[in-house]
Image (cartoon, rainbow, N blue to C red; front, side):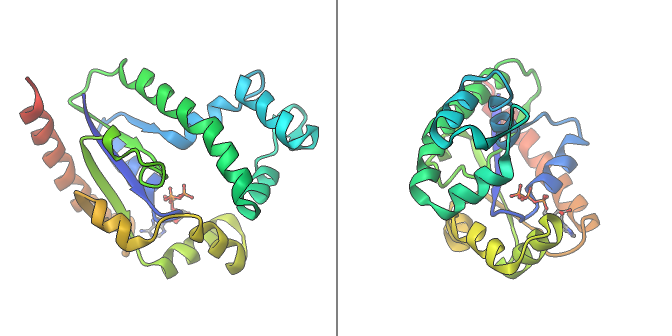
Length: 200
Ligand code: ATP
């Protein structure tokens, strides 16, 4: 299985781009989705989180993600603790789900791929890119947060030049969603060709 990683800053448009690949029949595995599955009621990781942050981190037995988000964005040590708990489990689960696929390539949406030093997980890296100001604006509109909260979320990630430098392909998301269709089609053809070349 040829693995294309999709990463980008928070609010850059990863989900939007992933949906365009999914519409072409490309399987999309999303690390954030896997992470959410791992903290469903009854999962061992949820018990570990409740053990660390106390029962108030649960609402009717489910993780209160807004509360957790506030805690970990305010305290880097707690964020590191949570990442050490979840990241190895997320990557193991992604590998397990990939093993069940039978398409030429798949797309792995991993927001923190570079921050977690997992570039080696994928054969090719696609970065969704847009200026930080636009990221902030989209985040504020989507999540109903203020500029200060958006800035805190943005500053928890590696900066744009580092992400651009790590990319094999960069998809500019500065126009409309419709503007993405052409570039996504070209990338899809490229990945089919690369997947075909990489087959033994
Ligand atoms: P996160 O890192 O928070 O998961 P993301 O990188 O997946 O975010 P999206 O959720 O795809 O980003 O996009 C962020 C917001 O910006 C969404 O509300 C989305 O609808 C909007 N958006 C994305 N791309 C565009 C675009 N080209 N034009 C207008 N709005 C867009």
